[in-house]
Image 1: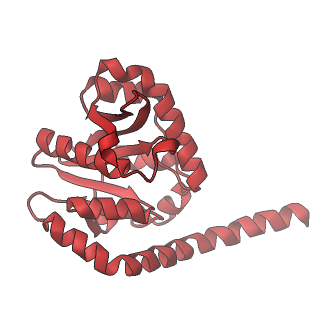
Image 2 (image 1 turned 135 degrees about the vertical axis):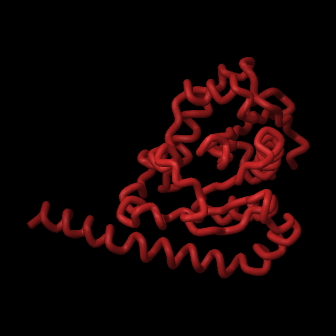
Length: 225
């Protein structure tokens, strides 16, 4: 249970964990076969110094998790990015607790902003739904080039570019403070349609990957022919 952890707003006292966090983000993305935007320890340190990150520790003082805030279009859009939980603490409810903490910090710091995220995981979709996020098309997300440039380190970036940033392996989710359902409603909606979401994501990813699988096959064939 998340009561086993202390989840706090990061400060300069936590910058020493930046390397560990950056390395875990990268290894986790590789293990999943998908990518989150790669972040340097220096970038993570800066988020801590700005008060735009939360960090979690076990009651024994062991680093357990992290997440940070990014802003786009002068604060009009906010993303809670880089959610990571140390391997030994996964499936403990900590990811959900961290998301709640960073969501609250985002709403306090940027009360008028639209909160959004991209995810390939059904578990993260569920967590977001519990907070009031809804699945949306990419056109409803920020169109700031700097945000999409952060996807360059993702293994699926070629797909994103080929679709002119209108679609990719990830599902877009949005919380609009001016027009949103209550968390109880989005949570119930996800519960009712989770099987449908799972099937949709599987079909979408299969269709998006198909032309690239053909391309890789042609490359492989040319090498051995």
